[in-house]
Amino acid sequence: MIKKQYKISDHIMLGIWEINESTEALVAGFDAKEMEAIAHYHPIKKAEHIASRQLIESMCRDMDIPFHGICKDSHGKPHLIDSTHHISISHSYPKITALINLDEPCGIDLERPREQLQRTKHKFLNPSELKACGDDLHKLCIYWCTKESIYKMHGRKNLSFAQNIEINRIKDQQIHCRINKEGLVKEFVLNMQKEDDYILTYNL
Image (cartoon, rainbow, N blue to C red):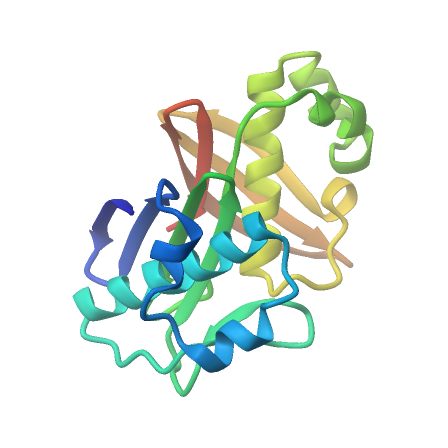
């Protein structure tokens, strides 16, 4: 069920869904044709897929956006069908989160601090970030979520987490970061917040 759904600004809305329904309850009323397409999914993945669509549809209603479904491009980035507005989705069972931005590409990520981040940190952090994080799982999770959000916002293509996405500083629940690729630099500020024991980051 929807846990939170609110506007961050006139053109940005954030939503959070916590899956506590049975699969049968989630499926009720869901598009039959789309159910066929995901019939082979693992039950958890199926629940995440349905909940994320229902969350986006509810957010679209609140923002007076016609909802005709969601499609993915060749890079796996989700888009609203027949719409110029932007969306981003993240799930870490049992939580789903989504972002709608009427004007600009957006990225959101949700994650719980976990030991796997410790084992893989060399793959997504540059040397200065490795030094800044050390063995702090909470900080590693913030850095991972930030880079995932930027990657999604950029279209899920042609970016190295360690080489092209740089985190400069974190202050007052805002993350100052940038994309640095082939001599071109673009700065961003992301919001960060806690949801129970999860970290949530998204661009403004």
